[in-house]
Length: 165
Image (tube, rainbow, N blue to C red):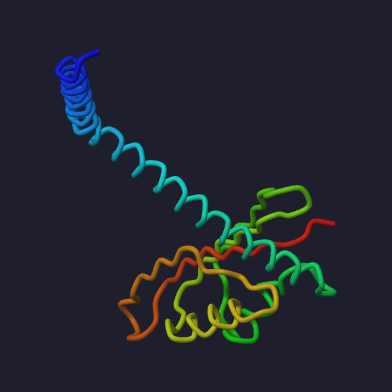
């Protein structure tokens, strides 16, 4: 083969590879947005999984702490009510239970109290949430009483997790 033929073949090959490279670059640029969206979805999914992993670790830690306690039930709310709101009459208490996972339940108590000092109710909530197995305030409705300043009707929804036996 002569030098001119070899030169033409090399230049032709270089031109073909250049065209192929430019074509692939254009195709990649067109696909970039789709690929970027796919990666963003995967990153969001990974972040959600990491958050779930963190939550699961906290739940497992709380479960182990509760299992180490002698009494695996929360303190009865009536006891805490009598300590923090002596002499106050409870209008209505609704009690319900939901099973979580095998051996664990969530107890819910909806407590309705009329003519109660609002500040004292928050003392009750604080004490209930400070127990070894805490009650958590999940909903609170306060209606002011027209008769006395600082008092009113309160409806509290409290929840606690306990080991079923």
